[in-house]
Length: 350
Image 1: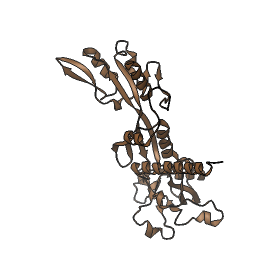
Image 2: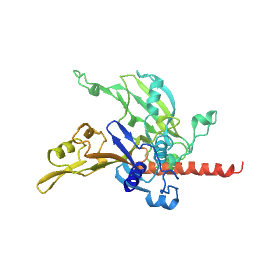
Image 3: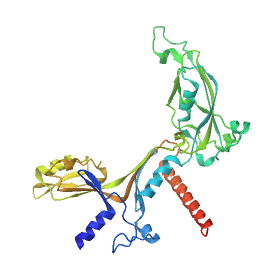
């Protein structure tokens, strides 16, 4: 009976990696599925089990654990981070002069994909109107940038030089050459915002003497589901926490077992003059299943993943810090849930 209960716990809570497949991939923790298990959802149980642990965070990237939720909710966070947290990006490009070798539409596309450092929470969505108002924009919904640059010969260049860096001035056009042009009262409201491209070293075009660019760009607020240029993350992904269970492995087998895993997962410890394998940090494992290729080792180890323990990795484009992106994603999900509940209440008796 105890073995049967243990097997049910494994099916409910672990994904098992086998040599030729993966077992227990489907969620089975719904009410009434197993006799003796009350899987009815309740707030107290959820609050007790749910937690978020920040493992690592810097200016542009973040790794955190989200424990105690279903895969559907974890995937909702991932998709919201990719496609539904708003940012500012170049939407309209007015090219007054472009004598470079790059075609207008290619250059406009490159400009659109440059991350713009402007807090989207401070701006409104652009109204889908028509006429001159849409083109000009206003201080509450548009950031205007200008790129005006001309390549000339360097009069101080050596006559024998063949290096373009020395021969020409302004021959490399970078994103740092995109300058913010305040609209209305933006100069006062966003005086300390430092609006402009996130990175200044993105190469836009190469010019030669006599070639020039004269471009005005309008940046608006948008969502990644409309265009990838509005996505606030370079990547947002999650994986289940690996779990490695070892039997007693010693000597030469322990050394080979250690080499089957990523560095830092398995270490050797000495007991009674012998070397034994020990799991040190299972979260570093890439789940390659290399150990299952060895006939004398594969029955000594059990590879699994914790079903409700998600290891999230978020890399921001630099528009907003990663912790702010997570907070904004949570707000979006709460709004979606509230909208759904309102719809249920409105159509409850129909």
